Image (cartoon, rainbow, N blue to C red; front, side, top):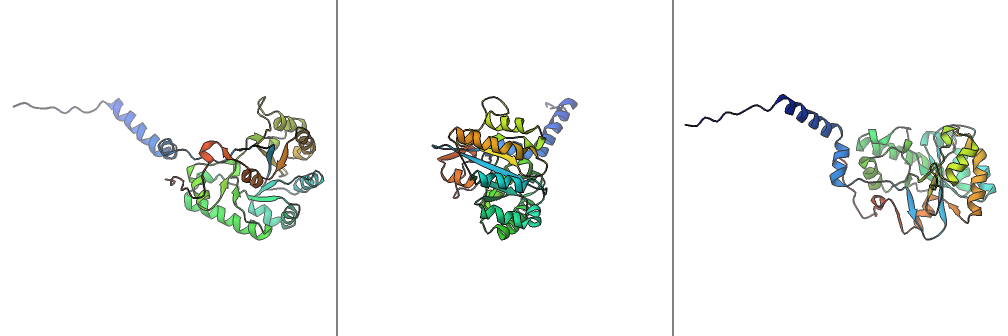
Length: 264
């Protein structure tokens, strides 16, 4: 009779297996996205005109928003303002002015926290809480959202899309929140943080109208005049997307009738 001896796997193999299991569990969202498809927010639009989306995020502050509104009104520019609902509730008169001046209101969430750290139910609650406040104050149907800190994953995009939202990022970052000085903010937008990556047709520009970005007020008139001089039209994101053939990157092209991959 032949006796078969079962050998225990080497300890090293067991350790490696344990590490692999840990990585799969700890980073399951990333692992799943490799096989299920990584969802993306909208960074830019593919357009056949010279339109550029201009956007401002506001989460806190008392002094910067109004001067920016004055500049935009003087230059006859309408933009998209992504507002956190606590700020909007504290400054209803500024929200009403934004609407009166023809600006578009988007959501910047409720609490200024990374939505990708939350579960689907909590993400839904954050978006709904902000939507209730913003729609009541603005009278607009709010269906654009910029995740706080730009933090997203498949869960965030799936939940937002199921609620009828488009998740908006940016392709041109002014880096105004770093307070680099107005000249640097102007250069970051016109020429790009890296040479050749500045504003162009279909781009979405990120500014802040919070008090954390005081250089925006000094930079904005030159940015607007320079881009106008190049023949560009600065518009709200909603208008940019309505006139676009598609959005970039391709993974952001979710149609309303499509169901995104369920978040794990």
